[in-house]
Image 1 (cartoon, helix red, strand yellow):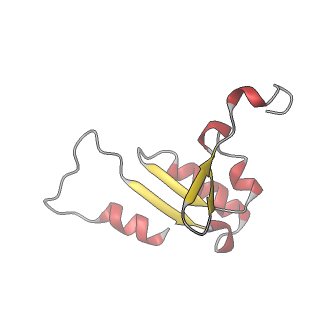
Image 2: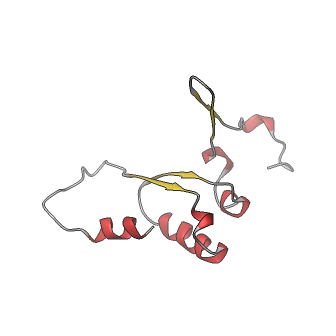
Length: 95
């Protein structure tokens, strides 16, 4: 997380295109942050216009993300497969 904030503070001649959405990749933030700080950091990141790729085992973090945005990656011996929940598969009660 600290690296992300340093990047935001960098100034220079480099300008992103107005349509560009930077990608932030975060791996297992729950291992380094207290659950309250994890929640605060996630809400802060939601304020920025960027794409987030996050690997996590945290149910608390997953609960803050809409189901349509969750994707499970499974690594097989020769490829990586992405799985998503289909919107029509869950009842309103399940959602």
